Length: 430
Image (cartoon, rainbow, N blue to C red; front, top):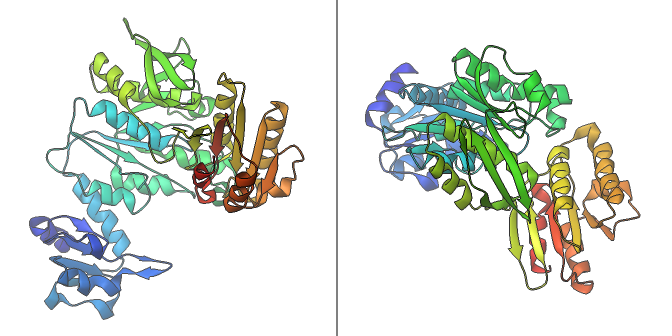
């Protein structure tokens, strides 16, 4: 395998796992999934311009045609990425968390890009394939890399840390996400904090929310850190000035206090993501004014805390994912917005295993206690049988048909649910 690594380093132009994105002179690595087998496309990759191809099924190997056999293509990809990562002596910032990791990554990228050439994970390509592919994009012009790390089962973060070897790290929070894969909440905590342990071995630095008791409890005692929050004990101290519905805040560090900063994001949960990004800027010596400009200019996309004005209503689209922690945060922030005409449309929170029904009932209780009009979408909410919902349906299409006949007008509406519920499709009838 080492000989192959050296051969490829000297002569390839990038790495691809998809024959549709082959660059001339690149390396194609055949990956397999439940419904595809990349080995079958190795020859096609060579025909499309790849210089070499890697397979892990002997029937597809052909060294005369530069198609080489390895034991496992995924492991080869990961080891190649780690070898490549270690060619660069630059800060590697790992980001994980149950909620907010992609938004925090984008905010940190916005701040650090005012000073550095930054490589960051594209979208949420944060798994055992996305992380190595991101690392393989590193080149001599990059001065810092931000690597997002996702997890849905034990040891996932440890695996990704072994590939990326981050020397800086941030866990946005630890909540009840993907419980089905972790079995219980303790499993989530153990897996997420694997990032802390990895940075500790590198004698690196952590960025930490000092108001998060779970994170504080699991911090290695000897590790360097910069802490953010609203408490006096924070290094970077923030103040949430307004939610109307966009966040307005100010922050201070040492002798500096910022002016009030108006942002393009909403939700108290994003307030802490802003403080994390500010802390990253401080850690890497970005000028205060550049930090302020970056967080003020950033505009989210991909249905993450977006506001959309329609002819009938104002929509808050937060439909990218949902778990008990993010749902609770979204609703509590929505309750804080000053508006007399508010509705909520919530979709099922998936991958919660045995905790699913109980966690959905908690959300309904919260809505009922706050006396707010709401609609539910999905089998789990439907099973809860809330008699206070305006309408409880199985899927988005059913609610869409209902809303065509029962219009909502003049409302501020929060749409929050798991990605596969596709609540964003309702914007056509809202």
